Image (cartoon, rainbow, N blue to C red; front, side):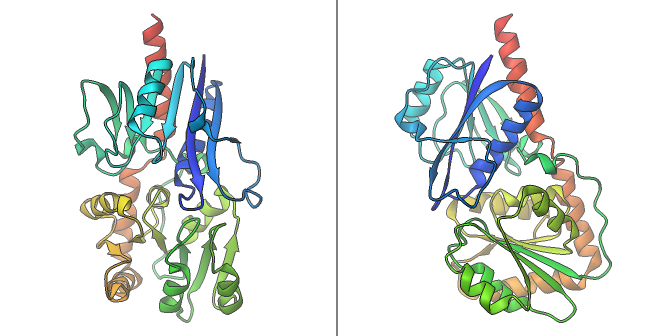
Length: 325
């Protein structure tokens, strides 16, 4: 049995697709399943070490003869997916918002409340909802979160690029006495030198950290402030009370559903006027109320237990075995 994982990342795309595919890679490795792992990467990878994938423009290649293909893409079109389904035994399409009409196979959408989405159930087997969200291996076995009565540490992260420079804008709003602030800057942040020079005394500023370091920062933070992508599920798994920013249109549904679930109280769209007022209202709400932080923490861990990647790997293996019998 042999499979392949196909995804993309880098400048203009970020690392969200790559991170969830790494988690599926780790789950397959744990099951000793042979597979290739290709990433169509835009940018410089020098700052990222020990990657488990090959950088290759797989969209220009003919992917044929695999037992399974896992694809996580916003760039590949419907015809490309149809060719994958035609030329390989099992296609697993990772989706976030019903981007295209997917061909026969599995559709995986681990987004919050994705089990309410109207996928074609006749053509596809759907793996929907946070039960199946693939998280990096260090987030697989997080215990029940214990919170501090008072806020002592605040953690900020806004993705690989942070196109709106929220790192600097939010930092300026929350510098408070007796609160330790840690900011993680992504590898493609265009203002990182300026931020480090200006704020290195007010905050601990980190770059190029490992998944384990990211997990530990979340576990020690009393409040996290983040962009609304894949990181939201890691924050939920660690039970970290969070404030989330919508920084892309494709995050809107995810954010609205986290609000419905109770993990956040408001969706902060960075492109609306006076977003700062809405942000400070949420920040003060969490800063002043232990009970509110405890409630949000419990909601996050109720929805995300970290076992999604293992469940997906099991589903793929069971499907292929049943087809062989």
